[in-house]
Image (cartoon, rainbow, N blue to C red):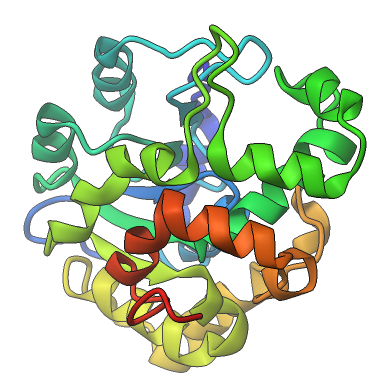
Length: 279
């Protein structure tokens, strides 16, 4: 979570784009907000693509998460505000950030240009199992997942959580609940991960429109879109596995569907993935 600042690179960017006039409200901070396992690194890469056409940072400023990865301990709410207050104009930053009132007031101010990406929670729980079991051996739940007899048992836990431990890990709906407030903020662009995979051109155009509404650029639209598209490189994502959508259909048994509907059926409807529980 520690902030890293690259003043020399920022000065170089400022020099390279000296002819690009600052927006009327000043240069914003580009902020990618994501629910875990929902395309965080993909959004990071796209937002960093703006540094090819404007004087934004060439590196991700820093990453913030509400939980410490190795211990699973929840950070105090003051930590998020302290992190946000360190950010400066033209930074590009990324966070798993709860939509608390003070945080939302800060992020929706003129200082920020925010995006929020999320994914079908059914794919999230599947991705979480692979991540904890096979990719991140230091994860707080890694040993526990390894101790379970098979993938199905791990997927059950990913859906319903772990009430048997003092490490906070609730069911998938409760894990998503602190992020729901972002859906109601007009100044925060909402992105379905699936749209970036299955309809990337349209979604990149939406990302660009959100940007241009705040930061008018003289560069041609095709040039900017090419900068965003060419910045995407899954091989540079440390947690990239398949980048596919609808993977849950391969892994959910009838029992998984049943417990998911009980735990988070309403969440699927709220996020627009289903119309009801008849899936």
